[in-house]
Length: 130
Image 1 (spheres, rainbow, N blue to C red):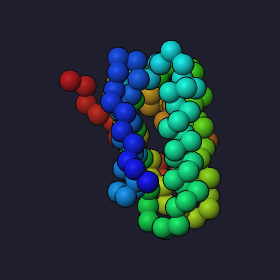
Image 2 (tube, rainbow, N blue to C red):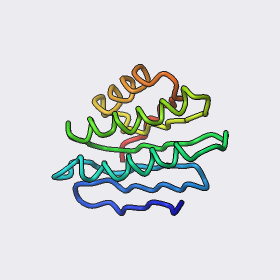
Image 3 (cartoon, helix red, strand yellow):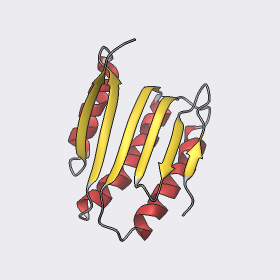
Image 4 (cartoon, one colour):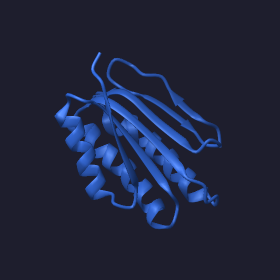
């Protein structure tokens, strides 16, 4: 499977999915005009990877989103749901959640993810403001 890389735009995050390294990184902001269109292919690619994946090595997901709108939130839940299903099936899925130490909204969303997707190994990373 070819790696998936989407460069960040002013309204969409950088997406870097390295299949052989088993890492997915999301970085930036997410408020694309059509969130379902932007995230749909990413989620479909992730689901194909997870369905074809018979390796029992850990999958690491690094998320450093400074902002995302409600449409992106729904799509992120779909993405984390797919990962959680894989974790429930026995794979180790590590979610590294990066947020500005002063951003309570992003921090609290991460805590909600931790509760809603309990099969994921959740690591909270507060990043110092610049």
